Image (tube, rainbow, N blue to C red; front, side):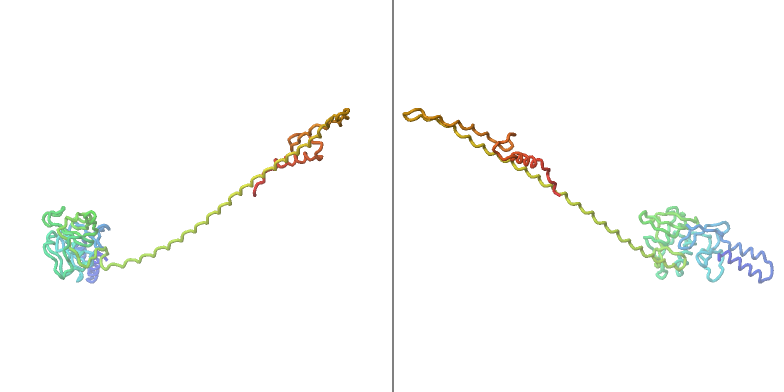
Length: 320
């Protein structure tokens, strides 16, 4: 329940118990606890603790809280502590409320103007130290007039994000409530809670993070297809056989010599010799001429000629 709702409930209960319509008492209690009644935007929260804007009527009031979120201009019970003595939502109010309710710093809190908070070292039992390297959750202290801080009081804010690459910090602040960036060199010092490891968390105990889901299994690679077989080379055809040469014809036999005449020795002339022999025979080569030798066997040259023609016209046999 918010501070305003809680206050209204208490006021109504008191009025009912008195059995009277004490409107004045209810109105006075309600107006004293209606601290700005602001809906704080999400960018003005650090670890669940909001930065409130100043509002008319409470610029000089004290601020109390019992949980770091609900605030009141008066204490509403033993568990309500004062985070600002006067001045409403000053920058120092947010710093005190954050240290107390986020980090449970109770034995020591810096006092005086914000610009003086680096002048005194925190006590050994406070759980707070001064540092020069910021992390999330630290307080950044601006000296008077540094980087736009008030020339008299200085300034303090809560660090939400650290950007070391740009040497910047993102801060959340009150008295000019908002979120902005500032150079790390603007700091006089950083107030660091020893228990702070620099991680973000909501006010109160930090919830455990969810477990990380297991990674999906990697699918197996598809098998590679077998290569196609290479076709066999074609066989070379066999060379054609050479036709046999024709046989040479036999020479014709020579004809017989003509008879000679011989004179009788010392006597009368002898008788006339026989008639002359036939003329020389004609040569017959194989397939050289087209006329047959009358003395050759019948059809012999025709057989040889046909055989030669058949041999020379035989087609080449293709090797399979």
